[in-house]
Length: 218
Length: 218
DNA sequence: AATTAAAGTGAGTACTCACTCATTAATGAC
DNA sequence: GTCATTAATGAGTGAGTACTCACTTTAATT
Image (cartoon, rainbow over all chains, first blue to last red; front, side, top):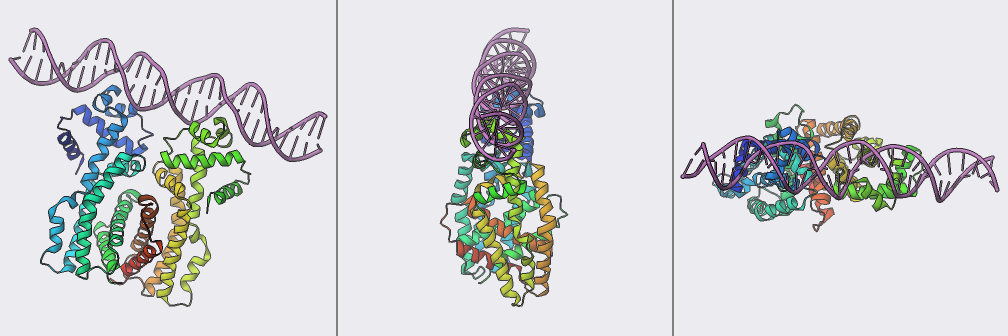
C-alpha cells in the first residue's frame, strides 16, 4: 500500500471525497508527525508544509487528534490484513507435506509484512510512537489482535504441532516467539538500521530457518 | 537498580550532592514523562507533582531537555553493563562443555536484563519513546553499542561457532536474532502485556531453547 | 553572631498553542 | 448568468509554554 492507496481507502471509508488540499494536509501531517512526534508538531507547521491556511485543517478535522487518528487507524487493519483472508488458514491444510507448507507460510508472512512496511515507514513510526499515549489506538489494535489475528494464528500453530512440525511449546509461547522474531527483524531492518547494507533475501531466509529450527521438538 | 540507586549514581557521576527537592523533581519527571511523553509534559506539571516551585527545576537543569537527558543517559550504560565486565567473555572460554556454557550465558544474559527492566519500567518507556527524537540519545547508544556491546558479542559468537554450538549463520545475523528475541521477550513481558499472567521462569526457559535450537546447524 | 554561598521561590516575560469565526473564493446545478 | 452550497482563508483568542530574575530562606563556616 502506498500513500495514494491510503488516501483512496480513507475516502472510501468515509464515503466522502478527499479534496486536493486535504490530501496535502494528510501528507504533511504524516511527514511531520513522523519526524518530530505528534505532541511536538504544531498545526501551524502542518498547514505551512501543506501550503494551506491553518483553518483549513480544522474544516476537515475537528481536532488535531482527529487528524492523527484518521492517519493511524487504517494502518492497523492493513497490517493485519493477511489474517482476514480465508486463504491464510486454508493453505495450512493443503496436500503438500507439512514441512514445505510451514516454510512457505512463514515466507509469505514475512514477505507480505516486509513489503507493507517498506512502503509505509513514516506511518509505522507514527503508529509505534503514539500507541503508548492514545487509548483509542491501543483499544483498536487489541480488538483486532484478539478477534482476528490470535484465533487464526492459534489454529495454524495447533495444526503444525499435531503434524510434529512444532515442538512441545505452549501455543501462546509459539505465537509470541514467532511474532517478536518477525517484528523484531522488520523493526531492525526499517527503523533501527535502515541505512545498513542489507541482503534482504538472505536475512529473511535466515530468519525463517531460525524460527523453524527454534520451534522444533524440545 | 532501583530508583534510589539511580539517584546515588547520578550524584556520584556529577560529584554533586542531589538535594531532596532535586530528587523529588527527578522522580516526578520520570513519572510524568513516562505517562504522557516528554513533549506533552509541562515543567509546571513536574513542579507541582514534585511539590516545588517551577524555578527550582531550572536552578538544577538549564533546560527541560537537560532534565530529560540526565534521566535517560544513565540507563543506557546500565543496560549495557554486563558487556563491560571482563567476566562476560572469560566465562565463554571456561572448561565446561560448550553446550552448558552457551545455555548458561543466555540464561545469565536474560535474567540480568530481566531484573534490570523489572525495576525500571518507566525509565525504559521514556528511553524507547524519546530515542527516536533526540540525537544525543541516539548517538550515545550507538557509541556504546559499537564500542562495547558489538565487539564482545562478536567474540563470543565466533567462539561458539568454532565449537559447533552455532550453525553457519553470519555473525551479524546471529547477534541480530539473539538480541531481537531477548529484547522482544522483555518488551512483550513488561510493556506490551505487563498484566498478563506470566510464568517468567518457564517463558525464559522456552526463549533460551528457542534461541539455542534456532541457531543450531542449518 | 556575622558572613557567605547555595537552594528555593513565584510573579513576570515573550512567545506558541490549538482552535474559532466572519469573510471571501470556488464549484456545480439549473 | 444566477444562486446556493461547500471549501478555504487568516486574523484573532485565551490558555498555556519554557524559561528568567530579583528576591528570600536555609545551612554551613568562621
